Amino acid sequence: MSELQFKLLRIIAIPAALLFVADWLSLSSRLQLSRATETTVTATEGRFKGQGVLYLRAPELGEIRVPCSNAEPLCTGAHPLHNESLRVWLQSPGLLHDRWIVGAEQNGQMVVTPESQTSAYRVAKIMWSLGVLASVLVAFVLWYFAPFEEPTIEA
Image (cartoon, rainbow, N blue to C red; front, side):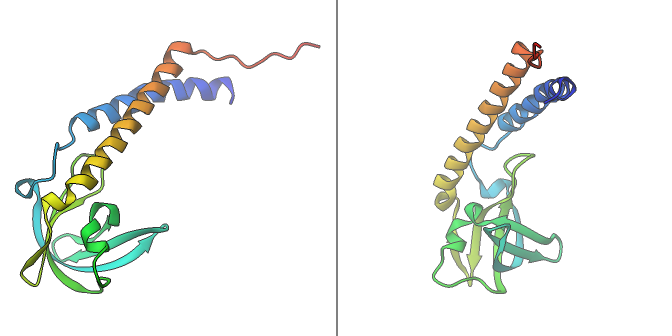
């Protein structure tokens, strides 16, 4: 990396780390139906960039792509979803995060509950926390130990 690239990285690292910290501080502590948006959707399982996803289509929201990690009980069901009608509750836990399916009802029966999503959400929060910690650590190293100098070659 050139000296200019290091300087730019140093300038960008602190605001980016602060953005991640602010987002982490604003995360919902848990998924709740009271904070979720209720809608009726048509759900289909699919793949996007090698990851399993649910495509949810609702007239008022358009098409929404929810990773299977955020809707695990629906993706690991007995049969794959293909144009199934569901009533779902969607929640965005933070500004920089994907939507989560907090609850889902199929044929009058709850197939996803906030309790069934608790362990997956807890793991996701731990991973987000590790990512925030890593970004703050990188920002600190770039800020405290900079300016880095390119090695000089002696003739």
